[in-house]
Length: 155
Image 1: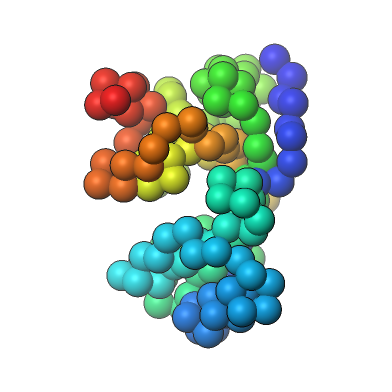
Image 2: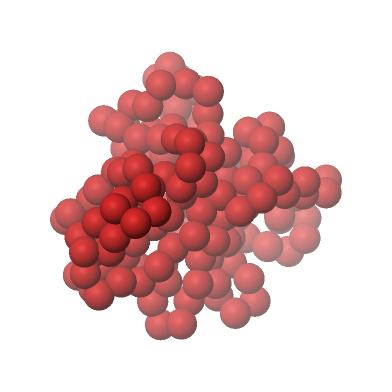
């Protein structure tokens, strides 16, 4: 399988004040609020139409930022079918597919608040990379983050 990357889906920034930065992106660039997780000091904003591109803002109180200690993160857009196939394709290339908590996984996860199907992995320097695609279903935030097979059973 060759990865047919359609574009960058999301970019993440470490910020000194998540609320101030969120206000800036709303007021100056008209980004729309996607979700806030104050307990983790994280804000997600839509850049353009909902579901098209995302900005993640990670405040200093975030207990587990993916972009700390020199680590970067970006997500590449594939189709849902390609993401389902990507787990085996990554393994075939000697890359470990990861879930949201950076644990090895045998299947993609679903971020139910969006909802989007996703699989994470790392480059040789430990940067967090992600394949992601929006799902054509209504958000279901109360489900949290779950394995794709669990999402399929709950639909």
